[in-house]
Length: 125
Image (cartoon, rainbow, N blue to C red; front, top):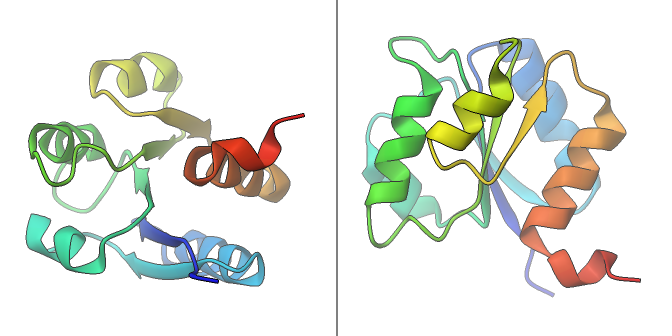
């Protein structure tokens, strides 16, 4: 069985490592970075989903989300925005993210959202 791939773009190293560990425990292949150098890094990894922090080092995550959604070869990849921002729902909507998770988050919640977004039929009842 081919593992689903999740790209984790998270500024906070501790959160990045925790999310990476949890998703790998769930059988995902992960790649994590505080900030991708360019979109080619995303294209090369070919993720099934992207967890994207709203506050990455040098720019807002929603700008990167918009760039991803404008590139033909990447726009199909579901993006989940992670943020402490109060208006995260609006930010996610405006940048065409597929979903959002408010920080602090519950580990089960993040696993459930990732599972739902990479394999929607697996949670059908």
